[in-house]
Image (cartoon, rainbow, N blue to C red; front, side):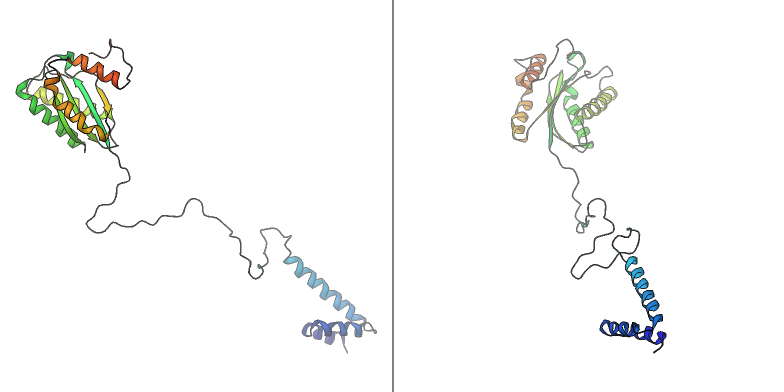
Length: 240
């Protein structure tokens, strides 16, 4: 049998027959040894190609049955959230919610009685309109000839300082134009947080300003608020 015929049969026969062919080759057919050696070299080359020692940039062997393939990349960050559209005719829920209540107190410049009775009610209504324009709610506004109390509910986007600045600047301009060109508010102000459970008590207190100040001055009242709320102060600088 020629060596080429034996090589052809080795490729097509199972391993048991290949062993038999090898024994035949050992009886004198030398070319078969060279051929078998070449086949072994080819097998070693194929095995090396799929060896697990190869670098990660080369071809990897398929996983065994039942094994899970490891992902080649991972997503960065959290999964994208599904955005559900609001039903037709209904507004979407806002991202920020809050219930912020301020009790704000400020006086006329020099604590002079500049808030005249003839325009006091209009001034208080105008103050409430400014709060409304800032998307807040004025629960009650009241005062006397020399100062004002405001209980307001505001949005989280507005700070107490911003509310005081906008309210005082716009109301002072309104009084200048409509009533008294010499009118001005004091530079500073007092602001104190109010819990929802105390809204009724604070509302009652502000509503009774006229009666309260028959016995106590504005200075006495304001200092009492500072002490009650543990606010450090220097009396040389709180009046201007």
